[in-house]
Amino acid sequence: MTRREFLKLTGASLFLSAAPVSGFTKDLPQGNISVILLQGGMDGLTAVPPIGDPALASLRQEIGLSNPIKVNPFFGLHPKLQHFSKLMARGEASIVHATSFPYTKRSHFEGQNYMQGGGSSPFSTTTGWLGRALDLALLPGRALSLELPLILRGSLNVDNFYPARVNGSSKPEKWLIEQITMAHQAEEAKAFQAVGDKVADQARSNIPRDPVSLAKYAGEQMSTKGGPVASVIRVNQFDTHALQGADEGSHGDRLELLDEVIKAYREGLGDAWDQSIILTLTEFGRTASVNGTGGTDHGYASVGLLAGGLIDNSRVISEWPGLADADLYEERDLYATIDYRSVCAACIERVLGLDHDLISQKVFLTSKLKRTYDYIFS
Image 1 (cartoon, one colour):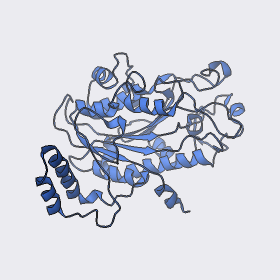
Image 2: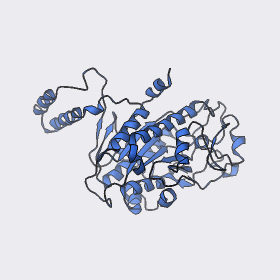
Image 3: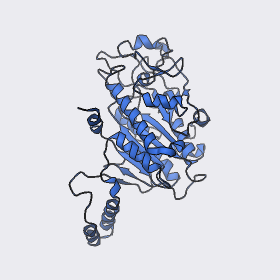
Image 4: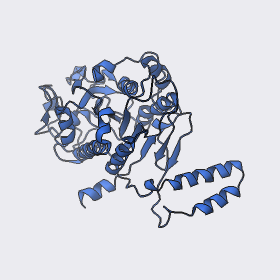
């Protein structure tokens, strides 16, 4: 199997929001925002190892990196994150470490719902935090997916689109759709009319569905004048309970794919990169210690990767809790000292121009969210 064939086997979905109409934004959107969902629980200690913490080596003898990219005297970077490291060297990427949504029960289903919903707890809301932010700015959109991810669901009408691979399906007869529409009552006619509108958008019909191709396409669409201002892409299979690997291995392969997704965004965005912010999202981290099968289990804190021209200076943002037994959450997990919702809020504030207090109350449904904007964008 070639590397390209491997990438094509990885399912992905894409959402693109439309151009603004009106809303509570201070002005037109000041940039664009892209979220990469890393499903399965990315290991923050592998992606960005705290090489200056004396406890790291003893905790990770089997999966410790032999040659991490040095970010600063305390933190390194997995060698598969080559493009991301170059962005950091150019001042266009940052790291938020020891961070998580405030969820500690280690369930994929609950954790993924919480990181997308962004409410007070898992399954506490039927809409997602990015969808609610787009609602405030009145930014309708469309998902290139069979289903619409929770993170993008809002109260406004959002449509989805899934390009078929059946011969001839990309060019159905428009007159037939019109005839079917006329033959049905109002609600059914409205549904068939939506099909006709999608058919008119022929450019979407043959888009490869691997995350790298979707990222480049998303970047190209967001770079157009009056184009979309938001996108979301999934990268899965981070749940490495066994044979996780170190410099090479399954987790490293996932990080390499993530690196290619970020690179594809950069290529697709072109000059629009200067007005862009990309952030990763994962439901939880992984245990500090290695288990008996050479992997790691569900944990608490992880790491967030940020990239884009809206970042002025690269930095590692962290209130490092330490990896000694007494410093670990329940004596097994990296402790989260930064609420990642505050990072998402800062990105929304930068791109949509919404006030932090409004984001806190209407998007993340709390009045107590700390403002981290200056740590990321100053």
